[in-house]
Image (cartoon, rainbow, N blue to C red; front, side, top):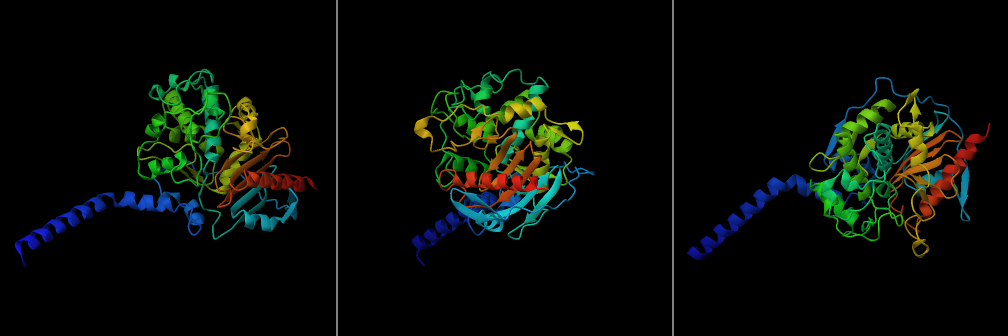
Length: 408
């Protein structure tokens, strides 16, 4: 063997060794990124949504109660079918079409209906996605009530100076609560290079969510001029809340909301690599516990005789207070829906009717007048089709359920 060949083989061996060492030190990151890239694949989405601990950094939250808020069973018939825009679906066909994995319906604090699908179980702790935004809203109201946040009309930079010079410079807390920050942000989950997917890779690789928020520099419009759903807005609210309370979101939410709710199981939060909670979508709970949160909101912030969230904040946060979408963009961004402080309102909402929603079909629907709560988890890959038609169709079903529960 020639000397040149020997040296060549040695160099190649050295390169291979370096590559192997790099892979060894970064293998967990590589695995996590690979799993995240297949997070919403048809073959894995159901299992992934019940096991986010295997995909992201996370923190367990020991909030389980020795005496969970009772949800006595009182089975009631569900509607045979419902109609929406000329299409009629049976209850079972609707569940199948929407890829429902779990559904709990409460009437007067009792379980009128409960079922689990696609091989999932009642003990699964399911990802909230953007339903978590409404939990943050409730926590925000407690901080306001306690005087830790003096006004919603001060700039977010008063609490988080690190946002000065970013796209959030000039936006008030109220603007951000209303999803009217004016920040330029692409929320398209189906676009690999969208801002929302870049944010997902920040999480997967253990980078800083605070750093990601501070790196956003472009505005789409002046703050408060119109509503545009921007998920990172909620992270900024979390930054404000951490600064105002001097606590992590994990500690504050646990103490102020999750423990007082008296949940039946512990919860966990997806976090970035620095242990900062993914407040815009990282809660993982049992479906019955999502229903308990909805029941508290249905009862004006009270549960088990304890006022958890101030009643005036429940009313304020679920009022349609966000600036409207202008006519040129009226066919986008769920223009048929109202928006408050991280809560949605159906079209022509009845008094006390509002809901939390998460991507791929997660809902907590509340109807205060009829004391009905519907907690729904899904793995619906068609959730974004037809400019919000799926959401409107689901709301039609929820209202049909409310009507069915009125029957003697």
